[in-house]
Image (cartoon, rainbow, N blue to C red; front, side):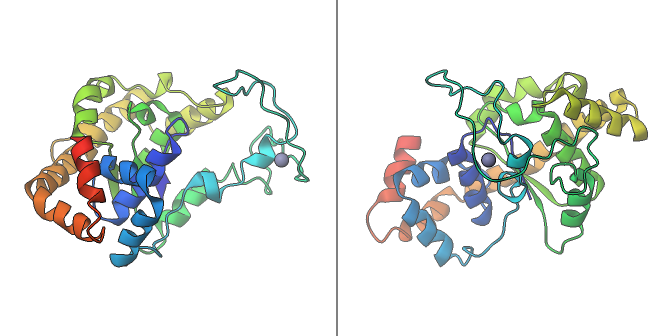
Length: 258
Ligand SMILES: [Zn+2]
């Protein structure tokens, strides 16, 4: 199960998935290689026997379109600033104001999390964006907390260690009350859900330890994995480099990256 925020670029989301499949913990190299040559990345995944791995990504698995189809009150193209054209497809809108419509796919958070957590071998991959904005998105944090509660294995995918160094200070005062969601109703729902089992302050404190705890926190596990990979950097690059059939693609991208 991939937890991601929608502001993240598609390339970085995909790179995080590829990188996880290849047992890497930073996805910069994968992102550059995807830009350079997608089919090469497919070849590496095939060689490592990971091409048939399954990742659950809400953007593909959940039909969110039927909650917004046939209208566009405010969504603008970031380049031209024009309102996006209104979709004319044949889907039937589900408005679901109280979040109980059985035909809606976007009100099944608890069921979905439980199903994934009890599916054999299912882990949570947290695809973190360049600005670490994921940790300020209410749904992402709700997914991370729920996955932890359900004892799912969790791991972070970060662009690089540099990203973490530059941005880690932004994680110091995370407060679920000031996090953002696309809809205010969603945020209220999340806060309400939290407050049925604990206080918001306690939740914030748990979130801090979930991220920063020196033994079991997400960041310390990531750092341990990262230094292991730094130690084996050359061997790792040779493995990647061998896959490019002598074209030097991996080395070129790696050098540009440095
Ligand atoms: Zn439509």
